[in-house]
Amino acid sequence: MRTKLGLIGLMATISLLLSSISLAADTPSARPTDTAMVTATAIFAGGCFWGVDAVFKHVKGVSEVVSGYAGGDAATAHYEQVSNGSTGHAEAIRVRFNPAQVSYQQLLQVFFSVAHDPTQLNRQGPDVGSQYRSAIFYASPEQQMAAQSYTQQLTAARTFSAPIVTQVVPLRQFYPAEEHHQNYLVLHPNQPYIVVNDMPKLQQLRKQFPVFYQ
Image 1 (cartoon, rainbow, N blue to C red):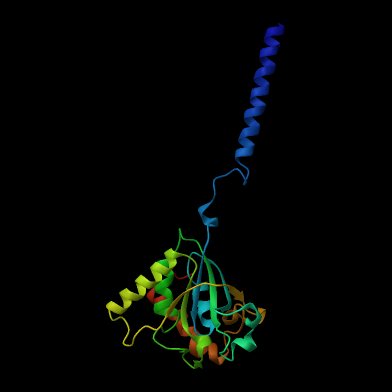
Image 2: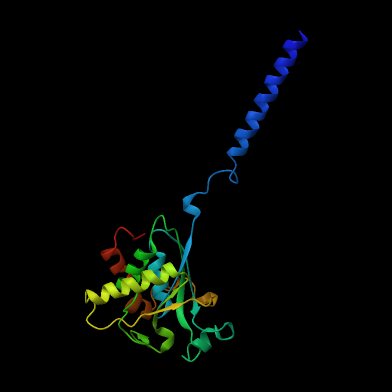
């Protein structure tokens, strides 16, 4: 009887252990990494960040877009100083995206085709100055290669009637802009500048890249 009871006890212990393992395996920390949580970062500058921000917020696979400054130092990463065009900064955006849903190459397509005009030197539409220049700030050799290669492809194909002037430069640091510049189009959809310069970009995104649009 003791042997049988001992066996029953052992089986009960094993059952409890298996149960514990099963529960542990089902906890978030023990599950395999969800691909939806994997993110990469891209930094683009294409004129006033209000419109560029809005375009990329409507791209599937993008989880976050922040308006800010890139190309200069922390001390001058403020709108009033950047606006004078002498800080080295460009108005830029930081895009967080899931490479399993949208690739860096596809983001480049949106950047060149919809977000801005890559043939305008140190300006974009009505905005003039080096702070409105076209630039790709790469964070890795892979991004540098992709950006340079795609620019060369567009040039060889004569996609634009004028030369592409987009800079492809290493990212030093990205500085988020002031809070009132974030998500600007959504908060000010009827502002004349937004209606004239930026709303058409969203229409073009939907038209040219319906698969990407969200």
